Length: 144
Image 1: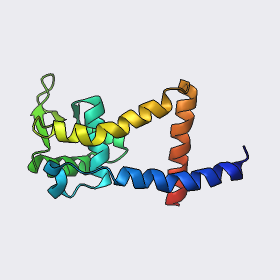
Image 2: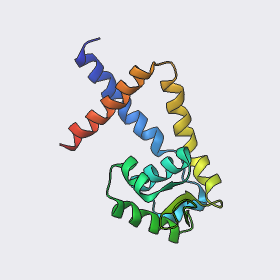
Image 3: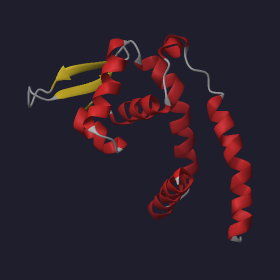
Image 4: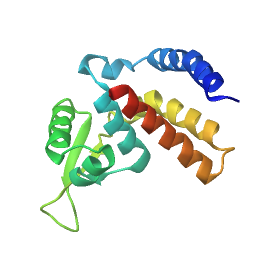
C-alpha cells in the first residue's frame, strides 16, 4: 500500500472513529460534571492502573503536577475521585476513583479499552508500539 492510499484510508476512518466514540453516552451519574478530554485521560488511567500518586499521574499524562492537582481537586469536589494518605509515606496522597463513581466510569470507558485490546491483540509488541508511536506523531503534526 502506498502512503497516499494509507492516508486516504485514514482520512475516511478517523472521522467515523471519532464519531462513534462521541456517541458513547455519558452515564447519567456523570452528565452534570462537564467532563473534558483531560478528565477522561485521567479517569482512564485510574480505571486501568488503579490508585496512584499525583506525581505518577502527572508523569503518565505528560503534564505538570499542579495541573493534575487541579483536575483531581475538581473531580474530588464532585465526588468522582477520592484521596487518601499513602500508607508508606504519609506526606504523599494516593488518588483513586470513588466507589460510588467506579461502576459508571467503568461502564463508560471500558468498552473503548476493550476495543483497543481487541484491535491490538493480533499485533506483536513491536507492531503495537509502532501503532501508538504513529498516533502520537500524528497528534504532534496536527498540533503544529
